[in-house]
Image 1: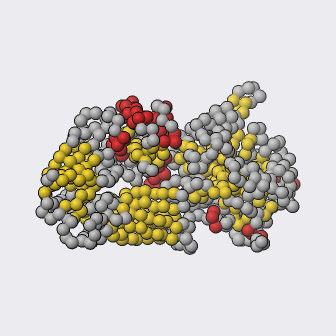
Image 2: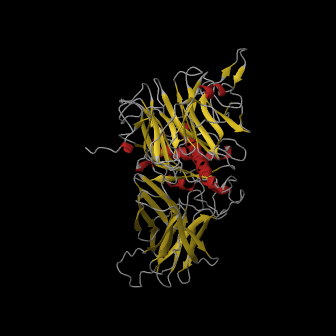
Image 3: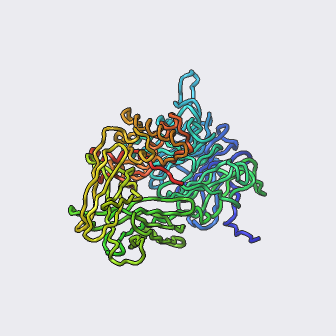
Length: 638
């Protein structure tokens, strides 16, 4: 067996450890200091926060040389403790030292220009000797914070919009202060302790309602000690789920660009047969620190702190912008209908559509897509459109890739030729779309038939945008019939010559699409939402009730509940996607809950959020883009 170099195995930080639990390491100022909680004897009983200065911090790749720990005070002292320093530290006015009373630790500190800005930690509310509330909070553990201004710390306060009457703890806040991941056992989760996240409006300072990270991350067991890599592409946490090496093991999940992927166990030598928890990564990605009660020759008892070089699977990914132009291989012109782009990697799939630009005369002048992917993976990309043979591309983004890279592709789609080689007699492909006559919105549940004399052809594959294709020979006259649940049937005559695109507009018959309980009707239903809201309006409930009736009538039918948002978010642009992704998922979950309450089993529904990536109308105005704030449904076919 290969003997691992010293930096590839966990190193017990013996100088920092003491009998009892040393836990929750937090690295600040690029490794200059380490802060952690400890049960060691000190000025206060129980858990306290301690810190140590790394004398060798300038050598980032070298060994750490930690001083004897001191109880946490700000500002720090960059040398070993002496009696003189202890006397100076006796006056805590203007410094920070959390009370040991009900202190549950797990610190997270934000820095700007080498100075602390905020500290977050877990504790309980406190009652004073007079029985009055001395520290506010809810019934159980709460997440508290204090701010450092003018060389003084503010009063410690609990975060009202995040905390609950259950145990909320172990907060990790991203360095820019915009997002928090934390642990809670509140109702509505998947197990004992689940991971949640919340977004902060940096203008108002208010946190959004917490969102559960979902079943891809959480289990019916416990997930604790969340930490996000500095670049934001790795989520690390501990869990006691089955299949690990010990009781609590450390896991990591990669961000796909859309969602967190299925977690993977970090394996040996990071995990052991005992508890391994509370892993953090340095901002430069060189080192990781964690706490473990493993059997080790230098172990002091209870949890000890360990350090090792960061393995490749925890290094932050680099974003790569993939762009594509979709062309018709026969005409060598931009494709006249939106293409579907399916990107698969590992056990994940991203599905998106291209966007075409069309002149007023119906001529398509461009058809493009772009998507952000990440290094360290191999992607399989399939581009397809009705009436065309799909094209496949393999993208290998492993190895060293510089940041800011753009991968530009041109994809030619070949028209489907059912009768063999092109003789010029089978005609040409003409794209079409069926829409609501009043709103112009697509009707994906439609069925299309082509009439040519006494011949009738069923047109297959009306897609989620109501688009389809037909084949017409030169000079041919034909009729197109369109039917859609909730709409009046229409038959319309067309002439092939000069025809670039077919558009069928259907009038509503005044009923809900699912009034007649046809299975296809679910594709026509849209649940609309108010601006920045995820609660279901009373006017939309009848639509959901009819969906439930359809599902009960068709017990083998499964659906995808798709949440969408508009582009009216007024926060920082680099947070618009994440905010709207959270909002779109909340809308989908609200509809899922309504269907659950109506007796539809959870395993018949898949929840997805698409942020603002699939608008019906291209508008950032809150009124014009109102239809983009929606939930849609798609039937899942085995």
